[in-house]
Image 1 (spheres, rainbow, N blue to C red):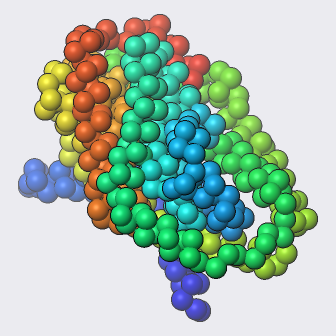
Image 2 (image 1 turned 135 degrees about the vertical axis):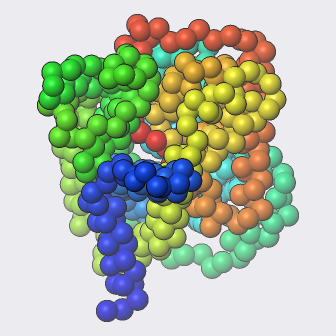
Length: 471
């Protein structure tokens, strides 16, 4: 077995273990120390989050994004990327495309990361690439609608304005801070020999990439998570599904029940649940048919590949895809595991107590939490709803919304592998600074934020919680 097959076998073994390992909350004997119990519980939570990620993100999100990144590197010419996103491209065009791309993609950060790596490697300027990296997941149109409906119109508007404006500002500042090193990189890129002329017209490459993006959008169309639950003892209640493992559901309650308060998360064994049904909306309807829609797009890609690619083209595409997989997958899985461990040590009510006003400290803490912890696109909304019910102020809420979608510990590890330590540190610092300033400004304008009403929460049924915790 050669080295590449051994690496693939290791990836497959880790994935299958994460996907199928039975997990349960551990029970402790009377002599167990509180510290040991806490650490053991955190380890179990880390595996729970990793299993959720393996089940809901890896095949539907990460794998298609890796193929797209490989296709970008293979099929897009250096000249076309430099023309539209390179250092000499029209700045208005480059930053406009990068900042609003998320409205088209409607995907999460773990899908954006491989695409960011792909366009950066073939010559995109650091500024437009950084703008795309930040704004891509943050400007998700479904996230904006959900934020406005559940958390308030003002917060939704502030989120969309902040995501677009800050994406451009962060991109421009990154290009200024690293002008010297970027000029060296650009000169090295331009000095490379021109690749052979494309065997295909541009429209064919564009059509293949468009079909792959549609496959990703449909395959990654996650269930909104709103459920009607009935237990085996007859108890009925409404909840939002946080994530599902082999043996249990984590459910965020929409009303006080089972001895818990509204917005609390409870873990129930599947054996305790008689039925759990989706609250039907247009979003869940698309979700029910997502694999048929994705399969149609996959068939289109397959037909295009057979018709337009020769063996050499296909081999190059697969080679690039595999290189991205080796680079990104271990960092994503490792980062998710660490975030699951750390998240179990910081209860939501404790976090809410730290961000209960609109001070600089509260906004900074919210920004840092958003940058480190892992929220799948749109699930930051029900999490924020719970935090605000427990006392989180309006400014820190916006700060977390602006910092959270673009960054997490797994994505930071991936970004570092692509652009290096200094550029990653600058990008993270800029995101934290911008989110903190925006939170303070919003908190000054709207010092109090009305709690979400039952009608507003019900209105969230119109928009999907596309994921349960972020990359």
